[in-house]
Length: 230
Image 1 (tube, rainbow, N blue to C red):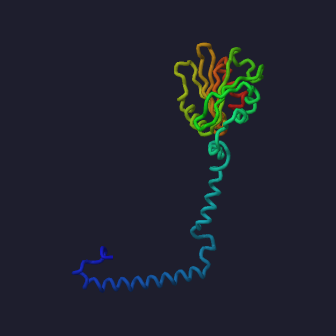
Image 2 (cartoon, rainbow, N blue to C red):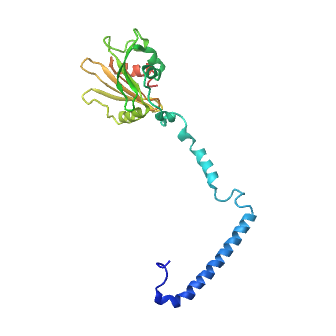
Image 3 (cartoon, rainbow, N blue to C red):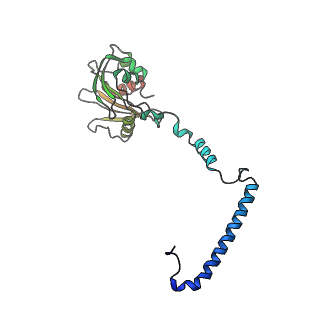
């Protein structure tokens, strides 16, 4: 192009130099063509000892990355793409079996929505539920349950960072399961000497809030009996 050519007053001296460059370039092309012909005759990279092809590199990457897309722990197994449960029945069905079995579906009412449109329920327990034996106030009212994977992931992080602590309470404890996919804060006592649990599971999306427990040990017992923390 004109931007890369020598100035006009240098043209006579530069012209032979440019012809020499052209001749050299043609020779290089001829040599390259001969090399490619010989390479093709020898079978290219069939020996497998050269640089991996794009296809083989993709296969290797897929082999190393299998854990990134498998399992619910941490990744959610695609659950975050689905809508949170939006009916009372589906919210209760999403809970761990011991907890769901202790809830009276007829005594659940809608108390709001999760951040992504799922139902948040306020539920009462069935009478004399074994889950509650010896660990709840005789005047307990209800618990709050919901399921939303995306919100629960954020909540687990907040719990680990102790952002849910009530600094006015004597006890603020973080409890986690062994696989670290679920966490809860245990706080108390309140004015009635009761303790509160605030729980989230980033794999299942289940979230539970309950504030009528008879002590710190009762709170951790509830988490275990309900199938929330194992």
